[in-house]
Amino acid sequence: MKTLTIYDYPKCGTCRTAIKWLKGKDYELEHHNVFETAPSEDALAELVRKSGLEAKKFFNTSGEAYKEMGLKDVLPGLSEREKIALLASNGRLIKRPVVTDGSTVTVGFKEDDYERVWG
Image (tube, rainbow, N blue to C red; front, side, top):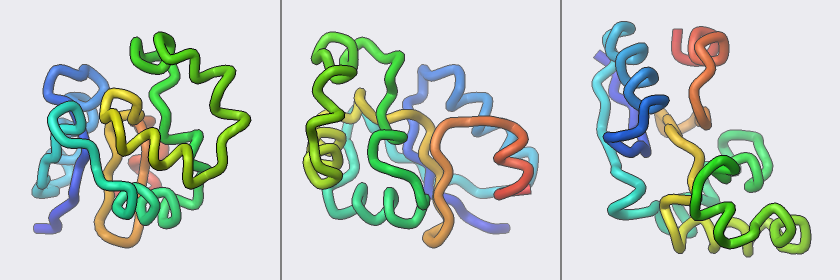
């Protein structure tokens, strides 16, 4: 059985859907609650690099913290490193779930993407 690391929040419906899907594919999951402990800047930088996405794709743009901080207007003026530092400072800003096997990374849950990457 293959183990994946998942950065999630237990009360998040999207996370629960992703977990159910992954368990249905016989994955063992190592959970990290992003609300309790956000990944470090170095860990996030590595996740961003391995995902092939820009750091801005890691932001939960529909979340309260994102809206309260006015990040829609702030993010365009920040460097990639500053965006990663911001994500590491508040796990509520991170789009969930982030799933990795150590070399591949997915952000959020779209069944088609999961089938392609983890299926």
